[in-house]
Length: 151
Image (cartoon, rainbow, N blue to C red; front, side, top):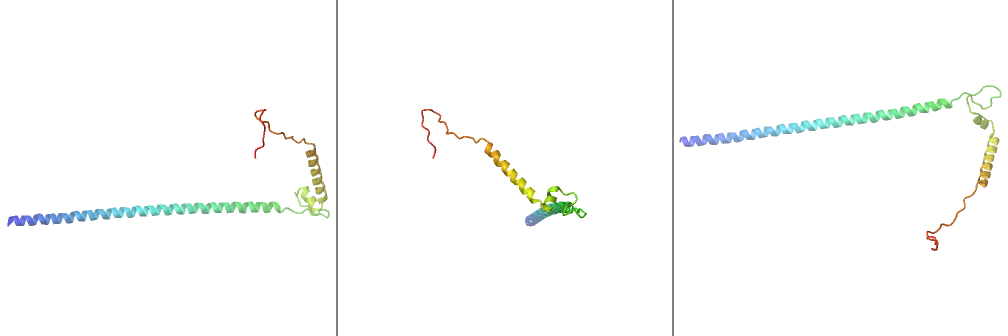
């Protein structure tokens, strides 16, 4: 009978040890699962922070480009908004304007056309005086060989 009691105690210890090992392994699996979940949370937080940073930089860049465009546009408009000359003989002249624009506004296109014609005539005379290069046939590498053009 002592043998039977000893066998029951040993079996009970084996079964209890099996349950203890299973419980330890289950706890270890839960710890690993929690670590994986924590790593996933950190990864998600880092990627969302990177996304927010990239989006912020894009928005700042777009605002800088738009601000530069508006600044240049206002600068050009301010430069184009010249004051008109006053007086009875001012015509369409603006203050600080170049004379060619004032001449065009006053109807002086004939002088400009005459200058363009003179420029064209001078260009044609220069081309007529320039020597034209004379073209010659290519020389064959051997003087006794006959040269045929390539087709």
